[in-house]
Image (cartoon, rainbow, N blue to C red):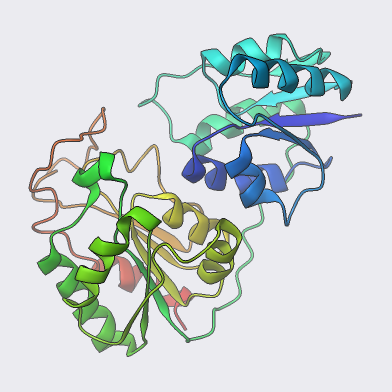
Length: 295
């Protein structure tokens, strides 16, 4: 039986899907875009890659999908474009569902798609403690999502808590267009900082996050990659939905400002406007809950 999994974007969702794709009992062909191939290339062998969104590239992608002669295509993108592509794939069977964005977490949605195929094995929840070498702080967000950024004073507070509790150096990560911001932030933190923003490929970032003792991150691809590499992870939320985008695994926690969100309910729509989402955000309860993984 030949199967494929379709997940085109975005990088954080590609990462979050990884434990589910790993759990398939048959190694799939991965249908994705270059970012997905860059993230998955050390774990999967067979790819069909949509190089860009131009019509010619779409045609080549469909041609290459059809050449796979698929028995089953699992659509984890679940949007109109993926529905269009799957209908042209030539696959004998398509596993798909459509959900309202705020109804389920991504993990629940993908389980609902994959379990009926009978090919989803147990997710790997084994854990081995990480070496106490460094803590990753991922403070950035794309320029389109400045609402995800915490105030400098909040990052200084977080670094103080971590420095006093663990005494480990910090490695700061981010995209190339975030390097200036991360460089500025490094000067505000307590403890030794190494700025790696804009200096890693996706595979290098994956390796860096996999080796961290702990990752503390805004809602981002780095947060998701750290969690699926079984690094204890704290995701910092305010402008986006922490139910939908919670990082993977029992070694992960989401943190939000319980004063700004007193009922504990996330925003149903992500908010791009900068607001005071983070004034009362506190990572200490999450650190206490993660204590069994931070030994």
